[in-house]
Image 1 (cartoon, rainbow, N blue to C red):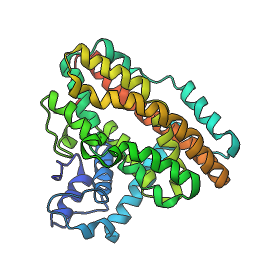
Image 2: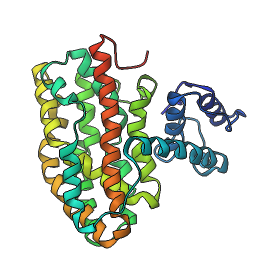
Image 3: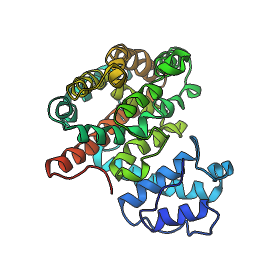
Length: 319
């Protein structure tokens, strides 16, 4: 992935440093765009990296200091949105997850895409989601070596489907490329980082923030459970909306696959994964529920921004 364009003093200094310069990595982030892009740049070093940037930067002390500072700011933001993790009864975690999902009254972006979205609006939606979908499942895979027993087996069962059971063409990352192809979009990993706003980057940064820290493994599982428990119906709506616009079977395959897969994953994630984990590590039961709340809150903020832009006749993407 090519390094993106800066969005403020800190991301400018960070990009300059990774490009061989001597940027000031102690600079304050100018705004939320600057902060989220800087955090995204730091995190990508632990995924597929940046073109021309040495792998050694992933663990460089200067980068780790910067990332830690940005994470503290991001965590404070999450606290403003959802509060902090609270102790919970381990046996009630599956029911708690169901209650969080049932109480979610966020913007219904899926309903808009199903019935009203124009071709261009759906195309914008595909651009936003490409930042995650082209590496779908990767952030949650960080949890596998941090689990044991039934919880570990349950996560592997979910991830196996996400990675197409070892068949490249069935990987969800690959299926999403078919949707992008139908819209005439660039399938290159990270091609649209410059085009998406901070709210989109925050959706991705949240997964990395939870996934790269063993201490937040409970929250990462709750995040995954929230995704699985709120996926089937929206993806049915996305597939319907895309067919309304003329999308063929290849274009809708990604969404159609999730309708079936996530209906099964929902039960595995809530009970076998999160329920078992909470009983095994009861001190982290509240963290599981907090991770689910964070997932929905950050996604809802992103969805509301997209709908607000369309309602005012603007593009939801950056110029």
